[in-house]
Image (cartoon, rainbow, N blue to C red; front, top):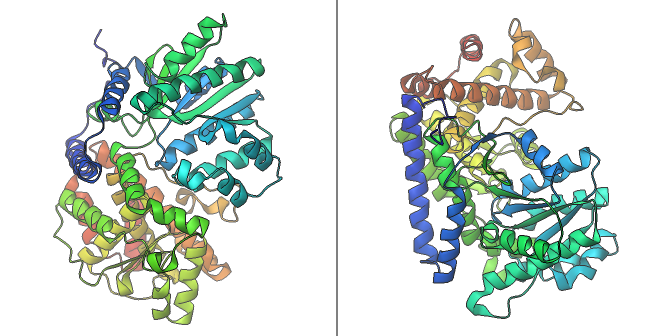
Length: 524
């Protein structure tokens, strides 16, 4: 039987067009990465080739419930970490939460902490020292110079649930084959932790390259056999590029949560290859500034001009989206991008408008401000950047007039802007999901538009009068739901490229027409 016989679907014509665009983005980023860092050393190149051999065959598609089931049957779980990709660290947290929810004992071992710093880690977990003292004491910004903000939630959850955490990294003493030396030492420490914690699941978060077959998995197995132990080892890789493209060629990459590679090995698919690579390039570009700002240890004269400039990335996304949708090129003249490091643009706005924008900033919301062609990015990530680039394209293409679209009559204009923004972000990152609204949220009961389609305008007037936050949050959420629906129908070939492009030409200015078009869009 062919190894892909389980992949039944074929991508639509529009989806194939999209995949070609995504491959171009990935190749461009690969070229940029090579230009920045050059070719890898020979030992690292051999390790990369060894790593890639793990992904030659797919046994079958797997789900996250299946992954959790396998985790609960295992003693040692090795989880690959791509240090610059936030989704990698979020996976670790979700797995921890899943194990705890099943009332199983779990311990955590991590590469980012050196074994010799265990006493400092213990003091931090016990609340004896604060976060900044902990990070300074372990020299985090020099020994592991990656964004601490992405790892922090893991430690917070461990502290909250009293999960033991251990550092298992070791400095290499022989530079000739430092990767192998570190893997061997790490494997021995993993097995020691298993012996000291019988009955617990040991979750290990370590750089994905260390999980190649000749790396930590091999040395753990050797150590287990040497000690006559019978411990089940499970390896969880994350986001291998070759696997992603195989799934994309069958049109199921956005629906696939994981694939099984062998009896004891799976690969989680939670991010696209170019998103992963973009995170690395952003780290190369801004990593020093991110650390400097976090530790408040900057040379002020050297870094006084170091507000992040994401204009180039926004421009690239705008160009890709317009080319894909066959829209006219948009002029970037007068276009600005700002982040939380530079909020001086707020001084250009009147008091009420400034108050609205400040509230979005405080709630970590990105936005496009059409009256001054300003994009504000709450986070330097692909989802936020691509969404606001698509909103900018809609404004430039439709040339909708500038007025107060935060008033209730223009609810569906704003919802359409968010829908097209979300659709544009899905073109760049098909794995993006609509954020859920928690039950405790005051607008939880009106979070889904279907139940309000019969008489939406009355509801909108009520929301606008009660609290403008309702208007803002619900129009955003409804827009995201519609944008996700449009992308799904486009991927399935049920609506064509021309139909999607026509929406970017539509200003959605007239309230009743915009509401009617919105209802029709949801019912596609």
